[in-house]
Image (cartoon, rainbow over all chains, first blue to last red; front, side):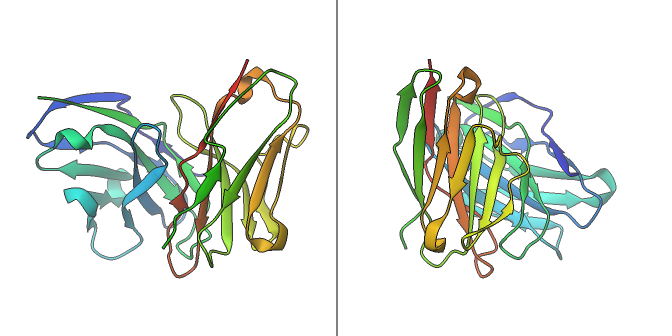
Length: 115
Length: 113
């Protein structure tokens, strides 16, 4: 069975600083990896996804993530955070990429931005 | 394109009462999911439908939870009777082979007193 670990429960960064959120996964087959963001009272919005090919994936809102198979990681990065990036971030691993995948989510990382 | 719609947005009930949530997926999306998100945790899949058939309900507590998707479009999730530990946000999502991602609704926040 697949699993996802997000080791950081809460991260605080200053506005304009760089950001890296960690994600490690466990899955026996080819992983399909996702990062979602959840603002308070909102549903989840997809930031980016990795299915195959280039291991550096660009997403919306200036986010990117790098897939490292040797480390079973899919860390999310942003060079300069904005106050509007404050939210909860979830990493997920999926079992397929055909639109009917079963997603397993991590426990999330809450991001706080200080002025 | 309209997103995934859910209602109600909030519900407060007492334990042992029953409650139902409704979800309308994005038009044309064959796959529909219900997730439970307990405070401080990531979403956990409860049930997955492909059109109006169940693909996976292995984590659905079937003694109290039930779900249906009539005509392969709208879906309802019911809890009867509710327990305190059912307090959570219930998220509905839909996807299609063309979209290759899940789109989430705003969720229903359930509080069981």
